[in-house]
Image (cartoon, rainbow, N blue to C red; front, side, top):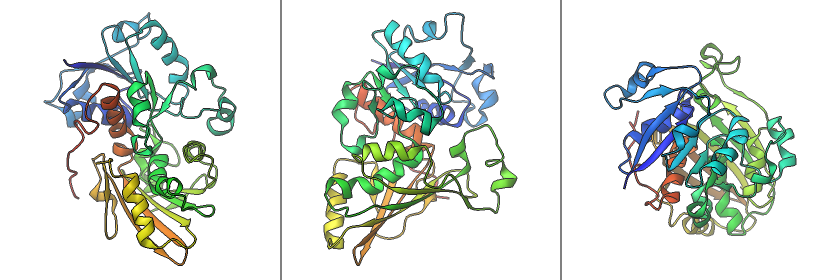
Length: 341
């Protein structure tokens, strides 16, 4: 039986990439795609999908999105931060059959008092935070994702950072505060250009931004069980990709012990690929894979992780979560190679 899905917000990079993934999915059919700014055929705005879909953008009606989701099984919210927090609880209350995945940060944090600090907003439905499941399957809580009606997709930086540190925390190997540098492409800042993301500002340039105060710190530390990190994100002159370097104190643990912890953590995670040498973003561009490498020397483990920020960092994980929520194999529609260039 085909799973019917609606994407709310189809012109941002997350919604665009999500549609690209789902058009090749064997079990999920996108029945509607909304936009606040566009109308007409989707391919007029997304020419790379020409010949692959007859969908047209749909505007929000007088009844909101209730008409669109009435016959849907699943809704993906790819709307800006602050929007899903206001609209998804009502949709779920009015449509008992519906399941939802939010790609924004609106349901990632369990403590509502953290939202003013990290997202500059008061959460409109703090009572719903407890029911939202943080959707990073590789963190090991797949059963909760399977049973959830509301899943909060992780942030892109958070995904890569967590993949670098989760095995060390789970294995009891971390013996101090890790320091993490995460380098990202410009698409991670969204489709709307700003002074920091405009092409002339990014081209032939490299800089750190929001050191120690990026909003993803909160969800990383929450998922690591309260482990504190020092996190510095950086802006690179590439469009797609995240490259994380985590410096983690591991005491007397040798490289064999650390590698064993990673092997245990990701033994049932087919989208995480151990790499014996160096990792590079072009190897994962356009995919949902995460490549991981590590070395250990004199009490320090250096872990490198690369992902596509729009793939494993957003749309790919959203599809992975949808597969789990709908009783499918979690890699359905995701085992595709990247371009390699």
